[in-house]
Image 1: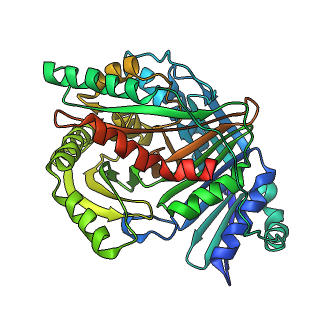
Image 2 (image 1 turned 45 degrees about the horizontal axis):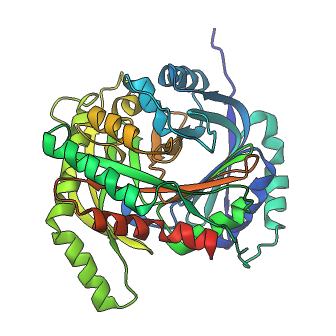
Length: 436
């Protein structure tokens, strides 16, 4: 006897007259829901995006947990749904992967892990929109398209007036960097990513308008607007953590940053100086070695390759040095195992990874939480794509707490003053958005 199972979802594809205008209206329309993940490549073609933008809304099921056995629970959830699931992995899932802990101050209160199975998924590529709806809501296709098209987009960006505070002052930053350098000189580690928080208390912002302004300034390839009830992530991330397509995995760590200039000659010189900077290249190569080691844990023998080494990519705010590492997976491997074996991403920890995480946990003043974690999705067939949560504003509307953090890789060649200046370059867009 043949048993026919109706598909979980129904798809509809339509052509768009103005895809950029539709994107703005779609994100505005999505704000009615409590669970939202919006991912926008900003038409940046060089970093292998499958879609120009993706929206997931309206949770049918979800998983929300602390770090205890979090990856095992995610594995069970992904296996059970076999559907689109969207969400995030906080940095503090390191405590599930290794014998580590997190005791620093947390003003935001994000869960360690959160994923949801959306009733409605929108996939945009060029002028084509594919809507993937669960059967219980598939009668809403036409109604939703009409509602989205009827939204009036407002190009007037709201001005925030947020007073930003430093969690640690400049002198304390230098002291902490010197502690990291002492560990390096002793041979405990050879690189560590040290981060600092900028924050505001008793503050209200408009999350969508703040995201729109941040995205307008930066136009990054891994922009994210995430809403989880009263908590928001507004991200202008330029970095991919990890992507799986079929049995191929790629990871694209960033290490090496230079500011942009409006003067083309000066801008080209800044780019060339970054390309030839031996300190920046050594930082990047150290993390490439770490990523190669992480990917080898799940890769088919001999399949780990460095596709690009220290290539310079240019974004609105900065030039970045990016490498691409790939591997091939055995067919029997569960997709969550790939993430668990590589988490947290080496670009946000240092090397050796465990020692670096122990040292920065002791020196940093704030629990990282979602910052330097990852947002992304699994497809129904087990593929995935995840970014790195950097260049991001985090907001808890109930606590009225706003936060952004920046960091940099510290090596034996690091100059504390230059590291501090690099942090300010990375923080520029967030500060501009919040403080005008």
